Image 1 (tube, rainbow, N blue to C red):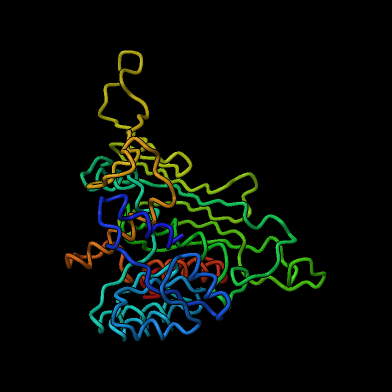
Image 2 (tube, rainbow, N blue to C red):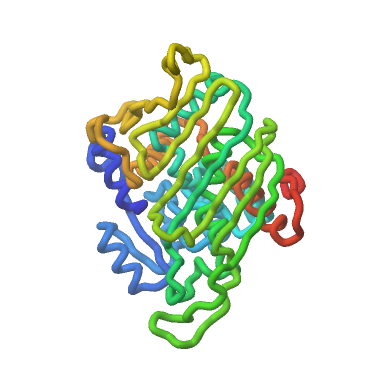
Length: 363
């Protein structure tokens, strides 16, 4: 997905073909490295990522390894003077995340998280409206991220189903939706959560009768209070039968409301209490803003086209590359990843002990 998105950036912004080069790829063994290298058209493939870090012609390291390896690779990359683009979640825990922020800061390199859902034009427009005061005082919100990816009890164990590898619905899906809330509404203050494992054993391998225990959550329900006082509910599940990639958010204020559904990404829906309510309802009601693919400065595809998941990745990457090229501030750096990690840690603790957990207590 990341390689596909990088390849599209020159087309999207009318840049020369060689502006962005995927120079090398590193995986865990020589065979998969060769396959990945040939698939992405890289000049170099290796099973030792340090070989790439030693190269002067590598400027950026894109970290897509399993979650438990993020700290190791990010630390090595920063100490090698490489800029870092890191998949979510940032780390295995808050302590790791904090160390990663420190090492990147000390190295003086730029970093960005792969929080690509921020980069739908509808979400960008929602951010603008909120900052302009369209909602007035924010009362509450509700958000969800449902997938049906683990409803099959015969789906074998993998690193996404093992706690010591950084698996679980909260980490896997929750990191995305929690960042979207953070982006739009600011810091979380405290969290109360319930998490559960719905399928407690799975085959160890494909077509294997031997079962292993699942020690991560399949589902997580959160109540939250934001730093601005707004209350919210968050539903996260990999057991959402009938859903594909169902991510959505609704925000309610005293002046207006906003809602976005990633399944219908062409539109941001808004409600404005300042619209006249008469006669017979006047102009009141939710309206659809035609955001479609209105990326600032983009050349292709045509703005009328629906934005895709790949396009959000490309935009996230493009903004990072532009920030490096022009020495601009990063919108979602590793500090955003640290806050995200603390919210998830608070939810995990709350589910274990019951009651509310303050985010600041974990930072």
